Amino acid sequence: MMYRPPLHPCTLSLLYHFIHDPLTQLKVARIVSAFFFALTASLVYLLSLELFGDFIKGIIASLFFMFNGLALTMGGRELVHSEFTFFYTLAIYFLYTGRKRGEPRRIYLAFISAGLAVLTRYTGLSIIPVFLAYLWLTDYRGRVKKKEYRISFMLFFLVLLPWLYLGHLHYGGYFRPFKIANRVVTLDKPVSVSDFLKLLLNDIGIVLPVLAVLGFLKQRQDEKGYLLIGWSFIGFIMIMISPVIGILAAEGIELIGKTIEIVIARVGMRNVKPWLLTSSPPGRARLSKEKWNPNSSNPPHNSRCSEGF
Image (cartoon, rainbow, N blue to C red; front, top):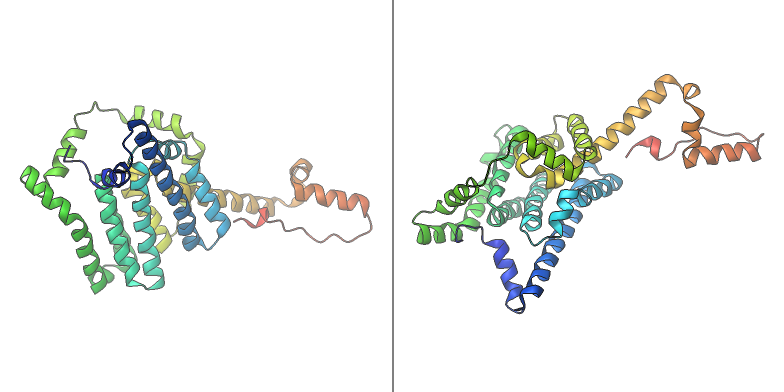
């Protein structure tokens, strides 16, 4: 089993050194998974706050991630997914905030976190194409040549170097652990794309993917859009437990809200059915005020819901 990524077993071994009962070790593994799941949920909020500057949208994105059935299930099991998702998201967060604030140290931390994600799960290698696509689309190859990015890629390689060296000693090749892991995975019985999608929709439902698609369509050709688009496309292999689906779903909610605003503005409030106004607390409050104060002036009501997120 030497080919498996080492970081998650090392994390558990630090605790297993003091805990020897197998049943207790199982509980500890689940607690570790839940701990990283909670950290990732907090990180989704912080990343959304950096992306949109709206704490409400950050809370909504975090809630979408937390109540994603597949991610929630993985967060309570003794598996590697929660720790992997945390380091993957942490790398995205440091890269975006490092560029946004002009802090090279955060960019260095982004590539170190990316290396830790790879050492947690080999599918973390997909983060390098995400980084490269994001940098290429936003800087047209300009910034990739800068000193901080050369240092960043060196740090990424240094994080992987001990594991690559152990792979060379144990398997006779620096990249042999990746090849063996790929060979073992491909031994599993293949599943058709249609069956996979059916199983996936059974786990997470239809609402979350639909909202995520709407949020994806809302993206513009700017730094935020390029980051989310690259994260969605290149990181598709883990998208359904990835925080990006929660962030895009929050964007989808905002798109629906703005669409409703436009429709109401075009058809006019006179054509809106009365039950649409009275079904909401602001509408009921306004009708009550008119009932008890028929002669008072009533300026147009601007509710928070009508303003979007």
